[in-house]
Image 1 (cartoon, rainbow, N blue to C red):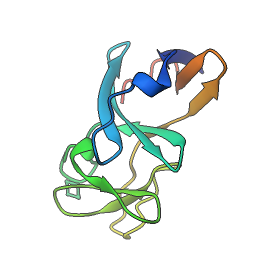
Image 2: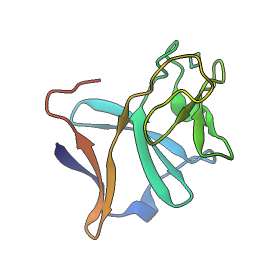
Image 3: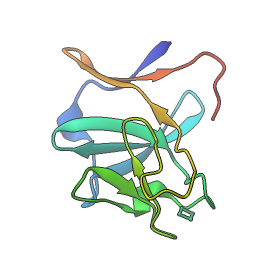
Image 4: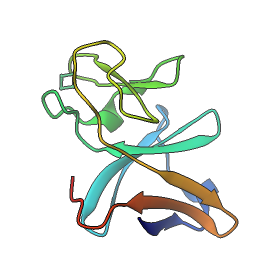
Length: 110
Ligand code: FES
């Protein structure tokens, strides 16, 4: 796993009202979310029909809901909690004293 620094200053991350923002690091685009003081990272686009996940919302159960057709996904493991059978790519996130890091598998571009 290659750990890449997202930011050394988490309080300066410019989350929108829905608690998400889009980022690109090392050529990989992803969504960063903060919910209940925990950071999550997952694909920028929905696996169903490419809805921009950062334009959706996080429901009271802490699942990200796609803005296009409202499919919901567990932000930890990408499981499609509304049961349509899709899988949202997720990335591990670690909060360390020196900042927030995202883990990329070598040569994983999706
Ligand atoms: S594009 Fe996301 S639910 Fe259809």
